[in-house]
Structure formats: C-alpha cells, structure tokens
Amino acid sequence: MNDSTPQFALSMKQVLIFGGLMVTLSMGIRHGFGLFNLPITSANGWGRETFALTIALQNLIWGVFQPITGALADRFGAFKILIAGGILYALGLAGMAVSTDIMNFTIAGGFLIGLAQTATTYSVVYGILGRNVPADKRVWAMGITAAAGSFGQFLMIPAEQGLLSAFGAEDALLLLALMASLMIPTAFMLREKNFVQNGNLGDQTIKQALKEAIGNPSFRLLTLGYFVCGFQVVFIAVHLAPYLKDLSSIYPAVGAPVVATTALALIGLFNIFGTFGAGILGQRFPKRYILSGIYLSRSIAIIGFLLLPLSPMTTYIFAAIMGVLWLSTIPLTNGIVAQIFGVKYLTMLSGLVFFSHQLGSFCGAFLGGYLFDRTGSYLIVWEIAIALGAFAFLVNLPVKERAIVRTANA
Image (tube, rainbow, N blue to C red; front, side, top):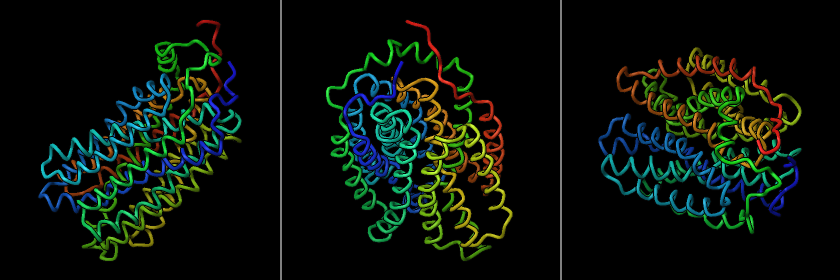
C-alpha cells in the first residue's frame, strides 16, 4: 500500500490555508464558551451545573458521532459533511441565543453544536489533509492546521468578550452564528473534485478497519491517553473563569473579567507555538515520548498553579504553559494513527480515538459544575486532572508507531 502520493489534486497550500480557516472558526468559537457561563446562568437563574451539562453534552455528542461522521466523510468525501457542519453550527448558536428554557438551550448548545463539531474540526480536515499531503510532510502539516485552530482560540477570546461587553450574551451568540456561517464558503475551497475511495489504498472494508484498530494495543493506549487530554482542556476552558471569580474574595485582583479573558487568550496564543512545535518534533522524534512528556508537564503545571499564591501574573504564566501543551497532542495522536493504519479510513479512526477524548471532555465539563455545586469548590476536579495526567504519561510510553503489515485481501 502506497499512501504517500496526494490523491485528489488539492494543493498542500490550499489544504493548509482553508483547512486552517475551517478549524480556526470552529475551534475558535467554541473556545470562548466559558465566557458565557456566568452571564447566561445569572440571566436565567440557572445553576452552573446546567451550563456545564450543556457543554458536557456537546462534547459527548461530538465524540459519539465523530466516528460516524468520519466514516461518511471517508466514504462519500468531506465536502458535504463540511457544508452540513457549518449550517448546524450557525443554527446551534442562534438556538442558544434565543432559548429561555433549559431543554431548548441544551438541545441547541449541546446536540446541534456537538454534531456541527464532528463535521468541522480536526478529524474531517485531517482526512482531507491525509489524502492530499505526502506522508513525509503529514505530521508537520497536521501541526500547521492545529496551530491555525490555536490562532482561532487566541483571536476569538477577546472578540467574544468584546461582543459580550458591547451587546450582551444573546446578541453576541447571534453574531457568532453569522461568523460560523463562513464555514460554508470555506468548505467549497476544500472540495475534492470527483471524490471516490481510491483503490490504491487497499480493499479493506470499514468493518475490517474497525476490527483491526480496536484489536491493536497501541490504538487502545492512545485512546486511553486521549481521554485525559479531553478532561483537562475542557475543564479548564469552561471553569477557569468561574474559578478565578470565586477566589476574588481572597485574591481581589483575579476577579476582573479581563484576567480570565487574557488567560484564555494566552492559552490560544501559546497553543500556536505548541502545536506547530509538536508537528516539527513529531517528524524527528518518537511521537509517543513527546505525548507522554506533554501529559506529565500538564500535571506539573496544575500543581504549580494551585500551590503558588494566586495573582494575575501566576494565572497568565499558567495559561501560557498550558497553551504550549494544550492541543499539541492532536497532530501527534493523529500522526500515529495515520502511521500505523494508513489514510484510507483516517477520518473514521481519528474520530474513534477522539471519542475517548470527548468522553473525557464530558467528564471534565460536567464534573466541574457538578462537584462545585455539591462542594462549593473546584479542588477535587483539579486533583483528578493531576492524577489523570500522570496516568496518561504512563500509558503512552508503550505505544508502537510501526505501520501494520497486511496480507493480501486480509
């Protein structure tokens, strides 16, 4: 099997620019949802658990349906999937804006946006990239695309805070819905003309690919580690702003909205360097060791954040460190999947391992709100995040990055 040759005549420049733009919009908008936590719950008289459950459901739906969306994209091409995702994203944001009861808000923000993210984020874009970028540049290109998503996070946090301050939560979400609709014309620039599943990539069926992946020990270890990634990043993204606000009675300087906004923006800014660097390092060194180092470093960073006296400066330093480590797991994890299994079902298999990431995201988002409402503190969830980082450090070490050798017609 030779998957080193681009298949569908999209140039690498085109894939990187418009794939990066798609991820910038999709990931950038969602990164700011934590800023809407207190404004929306306060305006509607809801507990934080309600908002946390919506974001948790969003991540769970994203994870559950990502392998299905990925399989559809692998079978029929990514173009129609991207179009549907852009439409659903805009509808979900508009639904969040106009909802005044919990059920409608949860359907819009949880179900619709969760489905939209299966179609507009890394797995689908990486499938296009895998088919159109040579294998020797694949991890580097994945790093570039992930860095674009990081830039979106950096760009959108101050933008969303500005919209909130100027227009309020409802109108801000409607404006974000208009912005999300830009994904639709972007999808046209990523259309793989005359897409067919290429026979040169082997005659393996979806069922055979799933059985092969699930039976592979390295795939299972990657899946376990990715759970931790989801737990940590979504807990911080959703609950960092409320955490700082809660501690403002002890440390008044951290209670200003600009501190949380700046911290989340710094995560996005330094994530650009982290994901780009991970793509470069992943071409030169074993990716499993880099992954293990990332997870262990996250735990160390959280311990330092909790032990040091809280201030805007310590918050910004923590955000910068976490930013470097934030999504740098994505090009490495997907690069290993492509290296082991090839690119024919890369979107589906990336979606399958991403399902575990989103289970972790669900737990991080929901447990943050649930345990806070029960205990009045986020401390237990911070401790869980630390322990999980150590766990992920260990499970990534034995991963084998060798390509599977298949017998004919197997």
